Amino acid sequence: MNCKTCNFQLSNTAQYCSNCGAKIVHDRLSLKGTWEEFVGPFFSWDNNFWRTFFGLFKNPKDVLEAYITGARKKYFQPFSYIILYATIAVFFYKFFPLEIIANYSEGLTDGYQNSNPSNKVPKIDMKAYVEVLMGYYNFFVLLLIPIYAIVSYILFKKKGHNFFEHLVFNSYLQTNLGFISLILQVFLVNVLGMGFGFYSILFLFLFIVFTLYAFKELYHQNLKQSLVSGIKYLLLFFGLYIGVIITFSILIGILYALILLK
Image (cartoon, rainbow, N blue to C red; front, side, top):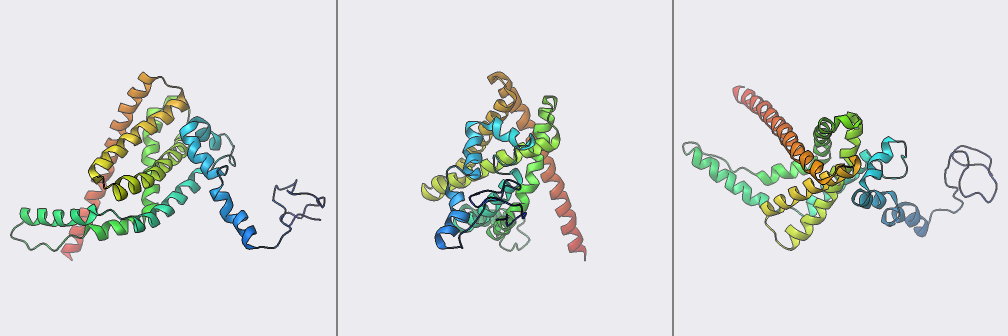
């Protein structure tokens, strides 16, 4: 028989093509076959997704270096990992919205009205804004990854990895943290009713610890080196982040002023 993918001649008992590596399929599609082919691998504890997710906690150095050293099939590819998370996050926030958004809308409207009593201020709907934001969540995730990459590249430049390799590292790390944030929000905020402010502080702590741990393992740092790197990382990140926020705020302000002048 011949391989259906590359037409390479194979023995009748072959399960995989020795030329292109494709799986040899003899059976027609059925419910069982569809589950095994498409759904089963995702729920399998030995598939690339779970191996990547747990590997970033257990052995982050191996996961982070696998892709850049050419082991492309051992773990989930970094940018596919981002897209998967972003897609799940969009649906997640539809089913588990944050009630604080509605309350924040009223507080923001009242605060702006008090500071401008002479003007009649329409209700500011932050909930609608956040819903739009979550609808394009995948784009915002992609925009933030380069900032993390710039920070770690500057901080660990002497270790020999270039910017694009740091882009891969941070794609893995931030995506893993994203999955953890979804789980924590459901359990702590939506189920247990934890305040969103306290949850944000808790997640910031988790973000710092996990990021420092990953780079500590990657670069074989001791505790002192890791703490120093952590302080520098936070200063660089928040400096860049605030710079980006100010830049976008200025651009939005200019755009808004131009609209008013028309």
